[in-house]
Image (cartoon, rainbow over the protein chains, first blue to last red):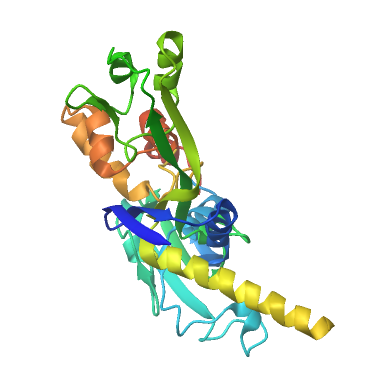
Length: 260
Length: 65
């Protein structure tokens, strides 16, 4: 197994993993839905004079991405308070605003969390309109609700390109490639596999003439893309996903041993 | 009505980008260029920005309370 980094920014990273199987790659991707993040789960309105209904604002509040210290906070269902909501498993927030103004996410007050995008508008209040509520945020995973989603993971097979001796350098494939992955280097057609996205346009044009290009998706090498929504870094998302998969497999093997 | 907090399809948080987008497009920049620079790569997020109309200011005038 070998990893090669392609690109990396604060919210997006991509890399190639050589020598794994499709099923492992897919189970890493699917375990993204088990990662815990913090989000507002219940809202109690004291006053809402705005043009939006209580439910509408509550839904918007839930979707605001929040950052929390995952080490100190525990899941509400597993907490020692039996799901009532205590300091260890829930975060309380409140907001009070009077118009005319736009209410931003930065106006949410509370302890134990961080608002990732403070400039998110929640609602607009016109003259004399008021908004006041208390809310409670909890940990959850995106199997429960999409608002807990920490990001996205997707992957595709690494393309393996072959050009046979039949190639006569006609250059038709260079013209058709939408990714500009094919070039002519010293009278030889060369395909840059890292740019190729397996669209097959070059194979189609070549088949009319010579049938010289062969591009097949690899079954062992995969290009991964990890995108973060701000709560965790792309690397953390990928590592947590593997960790959770590992924990699930451990649990399964323990249960299997018990059966014997 | 008001810009959605997250993209309907992919879930990427987008509400904080709306003001930047609106200001720049009103100044006369090409929406394509602005969206590329704001990091809106997928067409689901881009569609929300291109099709969005801020109606909440108008609606709040008719609110009875």
